[in-house]
Image (cartoon, rainbow, N blue to C red; front, side, top):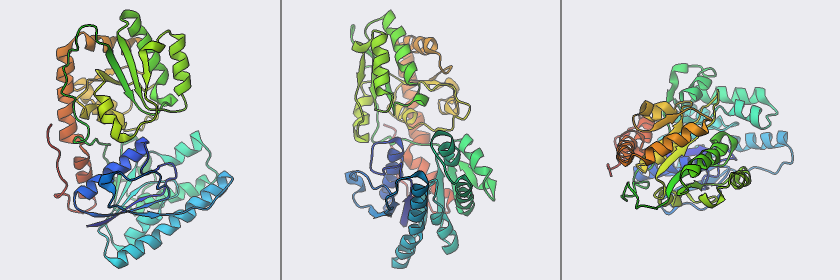
Length: 397
C-alpha cells in the first residue's frame, strides 16, 4: 500500500525528541514494517530519520517567515493548502491507499482531499487544539480554527481520539459523532523490554524512582521532588532519576537543593528516544505524578513505556490513567498532589519485592497484548477499511 502521513503542526518535529515526535515515528515505523510505501508530508522535518525510517519519502511543506501570531496563523494555513497539491501528484504517480493525518490547528486539506478522491483516511486527534491554543498560548482567529476543526473532523473516514475526553471534544464538532473512536497511545514492545535484572537489589544498593517526560507544571514536577524528600528522610539510599528536560528543570533542581536532596537527584536532560529503553532499566519504580486537572485529556506515552519495560508503576488517579492501569491491577494509583501518598506507595513497593515483580510482569503482558504499536495501528487501519492483517505482532518477551 502507498500511504501518505500528514503532519502540519509546527510544534511537532517529526524526527525530534518530543513525545509527539515519538508518536509520529511509531506510526511511521509500523506502516514501514507492513511493507507499505510511506510518504511523509510535514512542515517540521526537524532531525535525522532513524535508520528504520530512512526509506520514508519526506515532502517538506515550507512556510514563509512571520513576526506576529496572526501572520504565523496565515502561514500555517498556506502550508496546509499545499497538502492537496502534493497528494494529487502522489496519487497520479500511483494510487494512494491511505491518508493518515495527525490533526493540527490549521489542517483540513488532507481529509477533504481524501474524501473527494475516495481514498480511505484517518484523522488522529491527540488534544483539543483549539481550546489548548486559546487557553495556554494565543489564538487570533478562533472562529476560523473552529471551522477548520469541524471540516477536518467531518471529512475524515474515521477519527481516532487518544482519550474519551478528546473524543467528547471532537464529537461536538463532527457531522457524525459516531465516527469518533477512542484509541489510546502505545509502546514499541520490541524496542522497550524488561531489563531482566534482579527485582531485589543487593543490600545498600540505591533504590531508584524514575520519571520520563518534559518538565512542565502539568507533569507534577514539584511532586517529584517533594515525595523523594520524604523518602530520603526515611532512607538515604533512595534516589530520583529524571529523564527529560523542560522549562522547570532549573526550578526542580533548586527545589531539590532546598529540600537537601541534591545528592539523590540525577537528571539526564533531553535524550534521544533511542536512549530511553536503556535508561528505563535503571528504574526500580516508575512514576507519573500528575496534579489534579479537570480537563486531563492526555494519553501519556511515558506510562505505556513504563508498562512495556515491565516496571511497577505509581500514577495519579486522573483522567483515564485508572483504566490504563486496570484500576490498580497492573499498577498503583494515588491521589493527585499527595506527596505523602506517593512516597508511601513507593516505600511499600520497595518493601515488597514480590509485589513489584508481580506488577511488572502484569504490566509487560498488558503492554504486549493491548498497547503495542502494532495493535494500535492494526485497530486504526481496520477503522479506515484498510486491511490490517499484515501488521506484524509483537512477541511476548
